[in-house]
Length: 257
View (cartoon, helix red, strand yellow):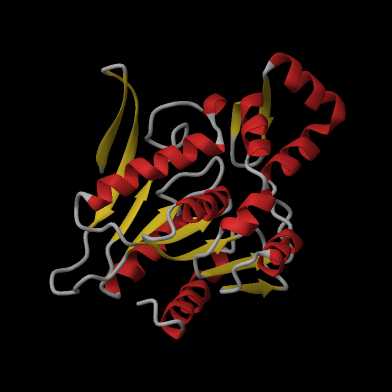
């Protein structure tokens, strides 16, 4: 595990925990996979470890990291915003460029997938492809629905709320909602131009499969494929092998690797 310090005014205020497995020698200029975990998760999850092993077997470099407020990185969930996630991604991208791995295949899960779509729209020249599982494109809508009108009003007034589900118990700031609202889906739909495979379970109760299908349909860039599992849940952990096969077929079929 490596450590990227986050410095402000000459003082370290936080850090990112990064795990980088460089590409094997002799594999040429192949892009590197960058895995992006979901909300309340971390880089050491089951899917991340599976994809790391498969990517290494196939001769690719593989990198993962914990967003601030998650896992072994610094910061807290109270300060979570999409903008902060994008800044974390940019720091890791610089880390990888310095090691000769600037061209990336982004592999995102849920919040990580949504963040990756935005990052790709801002850095299309270095992102080869996006492979995303249940990308959270309506995170603000989902959180406000969870809170309900009255608790959402108190959240806005006080600036914070306690969020809890089966995976995480934490404080969230209202700045998260404000920041998500500043990132308009309409803007992403017109700016996005990276080949992408979006994989979604129709039984997902966290991310609507319809929102993912609508994004692919409405995006001005048409090199986006959607694969739906009729019996799939949000995490799709039970079909990791199939996910990897779909991802490789997508990349090879478009001559991206």
